[in-house]
Every structure is written in structure tokens, then in C-alpha cells.
Image (cartoon, rainbow, N blue to C red; front, side):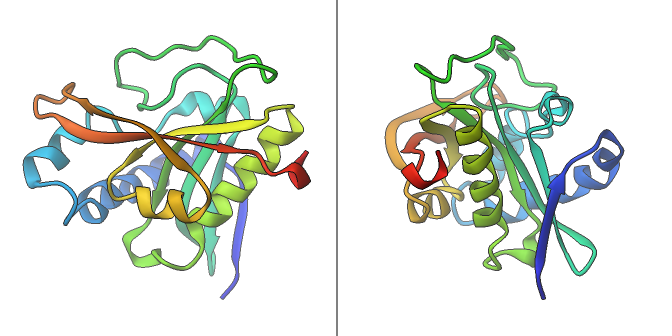
Length: 180
């Protein structure tokens, strides 16, 4: 079956929330313990600013939601609507990397190209906006996908916002010349 993608709409949010919850609960198993998974909810989730900015994508498989994710021209590196420390400042494409944000795949749709499709759409759109580099904050579960897509780790951090520290990896990737 073929994956399709489109820009997300605010009306998609009620259907995206259970997909995001399932991804957080299931796909981090084996990388984080139960306390860390619960804690990660304080730093993960939907960011409706991305939808409003027209930079958030929905991926469907046979008409069903398979995943979501996007990119941003704003300074916030990660976090959902409820997360603290968000920064809506606009980035300078000549100096700053675009941020890949809020990527989630439904657990029933892993290893089918959902994440790669979102990353390709993000890279293409960020390049069209003049960005030359992509940056993201990866969960341990997401790191293999991002490395396979050409991202390299630049910093490892722990975010204690949810009460139990959650390890994350800041990663970057130059935007392919062909995308410019």
C-alpha cells in the first residue's frame, strides 16, 4: 500500500492525539523504562504552532493515520503545546538550522517508510525556505531512523522536566544540495 502525505489541519488534532500517545507508550519500550516513558510526556506531544505555520504533515496508509511530524522556522527545538521553555522566535535561514519537530509513527505502521517520508517532506520544505541545515532533538527510540537518514549526533542531554531524567540526542544534518 502507498503512503500519502498532506499538511495537517487543526481538525486533525483529535485523531492525532491517540496516535501520539500510542507512539510514546509503545515505541520507547526497550529504550526507556516505564518511569522515563511517563516522564517523557512532559516534553513530547503535539505542537499546534506547527499546524498553524503550515509546516506539519500527516501521513496516511490506506486512508488511516500512520504518522505525523513536521519542521519549524521557529527557535523551539522540541516539546508540545504544554511543554515549558518554548521560544516562538523566527530563525534566520542563512545562520540557523530549521527544526524537525514532533515526529510520531503509529506502532502498527513502523518500518514502512512513514518517518522517512516526513523527513523528506521537511527537508524539501525547509530548503525551499532557504535553510541549509536541519536540527532535531531525538529520543533514543528515534535515533536509529535519524542516523539512517543522515543526521549525526552533536550533543547528548537529559531533560528532567517530567520528574525523571529522559536522555535525548541533539542531531544535525546538512540539507542535500539537490533540495536547494
